[in-house]
Length: 406
Image (cartoon, rainbow, N blue to C red):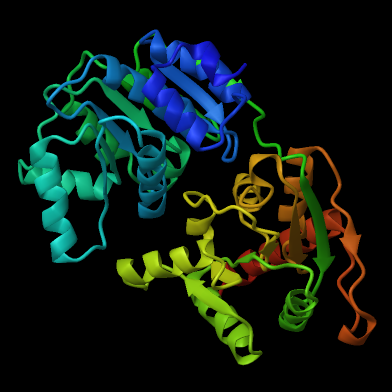
């Protein structure tokens, strides 16, 4: 399908054409007609499938055909980065139409806080907000949702993982019961189903390519001890093969260590973590998008909520704890049907986690040989690693529960 098939208003189609959109993605084909038909929707779709446009475009068209002077749509998201990204996409799609939007998130200075409050009082058409900041505004009576038409929960599974379920329920209690509610999530665990049952009415359901990486991603891995990872990382990044790279680490402390290592090696690198001020994070992200820096090191906050074209390589310094996090990490590359690469370092303790990833994506990822001069690599044997882990765990329990000598 092309976007002409949805019978959008001409001015909205001009914005779509200006962005270079041609054919609708599967999630857009299935979601847009249902949203235009005012149906509630549960959509299971991972990042990179075009889900943002799947809900933004029909909502923009509905606002265009039935304009109001009040807040029309609330989009709840887990992170400030995703809020900013969606706000930017709305600006682009709505370039030729009179629809306003604002991103509302914490971690900003007093000036930004006042700007957000003023925009909300004036009644921006679309609010994209993180739950915590929105709760603060509700407590101050700084926002009026009495005329709201649409509620969108984007990356709902991530919001629940981050502990926002009570905030979401509080926010929903402040909204009109008569509204259209759209829930987008990469996974559908029972907790998402429970939330959906509370806040949606007779929803239609869509499931698109659950938990499968894009076809354009070349996935590879290295077995490596922790002591070998830094040198291996530097060699990969110095090879000249990749011009735009994201390195994922498990914690912000590790992010800082990797950044220092690469910076000392003379590489063009920045660290992205929660200890930075919001303006610093925005500046770093803009530099990365503009290709003025080539390497970004961050935690899983980067795996959802950024949309940067031309990322050549996603490198997992640590195996992510959840297979779904792996999908979101490597989904930063090979965007919009392009090609990309994903490399993961696997130490002796992470083998069972990586085996779970391979099981989920239903394929074995090639293990590349470690350079000989780096020493002997761990042998990939996840079943043995699991037995070893269980043995150690049992031994520790026995030691901990050992009765004192009489």
